[in-house]
Image (cartoon, rainbow, N blue to C red; front, side, top):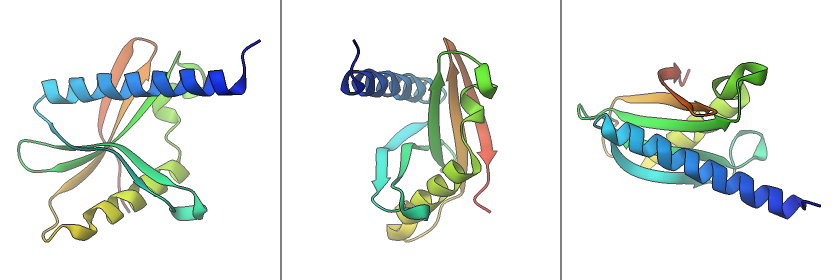
Amino acid sequence: MVTARARAGSTKSLGDGAEARAQRHLEFHGLVLVARHYRVARGPGARAAEIDLVMREPDGTLVFVEVRARSGTGHGGAAASVTPAKQRRIVWAAQHFLLDWPRLPPCRFDVVALDGRALSWIRGAFDAG
């Protein structure tokens, strides 16, 4: 019998692997890691808010990246799992991340979706507004 703790551990390791793969892909395309797992204890709806990867484009654009992995494309696949509520939490965390920046750089919200072995990088997947 598989315990809930064992499932949670394997889910975390799968998520960590997906984030590492996404980071390598983005770095291959010229982005530089600024932060990983940026977390704010309380976000909208009293839930924690986290940004998987914060990257910087060569032109200085700050890219907040949500990484989603699914074994297949059922229910719309990994990209479809970034719901409006999840988007609000990511935007809220990004606003918190930028509080200490003296000048706001151009920013963008991307999604890296892994469906099975396929990787899709969706630039500008959603807006802050």
